[in-house]
Image 1 (tube, rainbow, N blue to C red):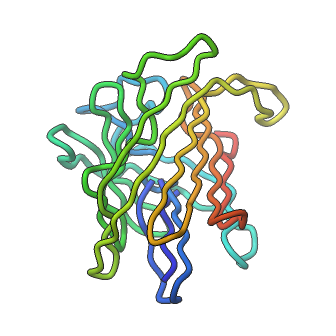
Image 2: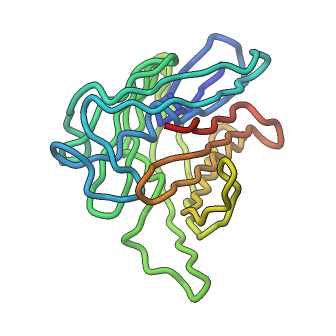
Length: 211
């Protein structure tokens, strides 16, 4: 089974290949919104907005995927958003300082998993850490999972400029597999880069194209 936990580039996408797990979040990561639009600079979105990414996934050739915010939906007791891309539909929400991902095209995360948790007090280096435990259900099979969520400031190259981002690293352990999802958020723009690995194998990479 392949699970692509993608914010489609934040959601769960599932193939029928046995014992291989890929989590991709891009279609889901963009759903970090509040009612009528996001009040969080890390993911400023509103219904009708679109983001276009250059994507490399598995053995597929490099291609372009446009993620659209298509509507508002409830998630984790707050108003979230539904995002749609080539991989399908995902749900995301801001709950105070947490950016949560819930449902994906072929899966469900319970409780919703935080990609960012800005409510956690940072240490002197600006690092925040958070733990999560729950279940990830795909093709009707619930899997017990645990995760650590780490955010830290990180300067990366974006286009022709070096920018300071909020870097999120989510390490998920389930059924003896480790999935690492890294996302880079540029305040005022949103998620500009994302990578996912199963073990050391790169499954998915996405970079925001200039708007």
